[in-house]
Length: 133
Image (cartoon, rainbow, N blue to C red; front, side):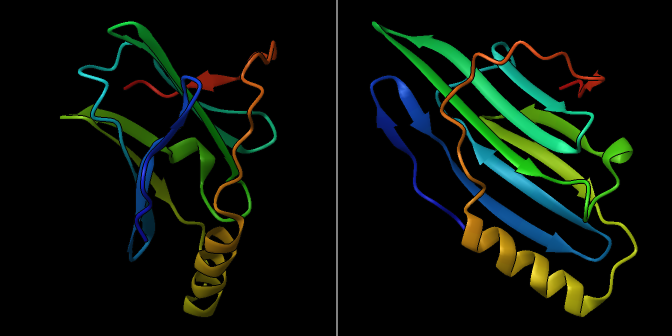
């Protein structure tokens, strides 16, 4: 599934797509406005919530985004990895030992939720670890 990017008052929803493989899922977040990893953050909270954010100045406009999704149910949070290359943030999420039917349910659940966007990116909580890009 791939989505289209949208922008409202400097806050934007980047386009993204999922790739499903045996044993892992890959989330590709398309960020052509970002030339390098500066301003990008990927965190996993103590509660198993993956949070992805970015902040970048482009000409006279400051672009920001924030996305979050619950990952503890389906993925090994200690093994999640992220890297950024050529405008694409790639997040690899190794699955817990689940069956094929559970995998289909997971895909449907995330498609329905659309990885709800949290518009309040001013959280003061500290996360146990930050993925190195």
